[in-house]
Length: 225
Image (cartoon, rainbow, N blue to C red; front, side):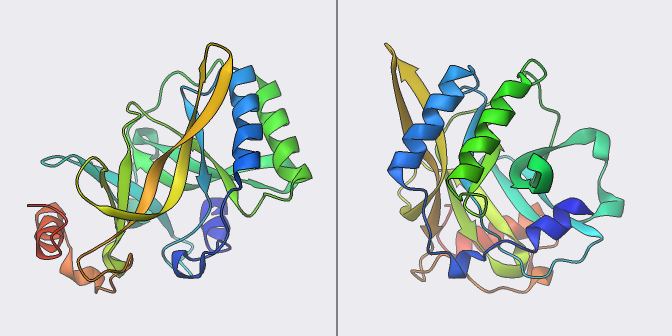
């Protein structure tokens, strides 16, 4: 599967050193605003959390509540209802194609009227500035709230509302805006440390067979109350 092959080429979060320079975030903001897509699409710092994922798996986000969040983990393709998921983060590959390397549950609306010109301009900017391994295209979804990401190894990563007292150390997602003709960018997703002061905690995937078990891990690491 193209998405799995693409995912396996990404730099891991532990080895991630590059960032998206502000000058390019501003340049990208101008493109998003020009095409009127800044309220629906953003950009993502490309990286992975799982090395050498099997080709019959895909990274899929599962939504949960109390607290609201998203649990992203490798999921067997045979368990995925393709009619009920959508691509969430995309990377630019050869021939200026966009390949999703991460998916989330649910359907997405409001993207069908985005003109090809946006994707052409976005691809041209990424290519001309050698950002193909750094900048991904992200569907923002129904909420623009800030999100904090925790990495629990083989148990997957967890995205939670970033309004709590977490300790972010790296911005990984940005949204754009335009007010009175002035374009700007804002970080909305971050890598966050747990109580052991690291972003990634290496845990066996068998420790989190379901959401209740995952929440027990989150409580153990003081991520949720």
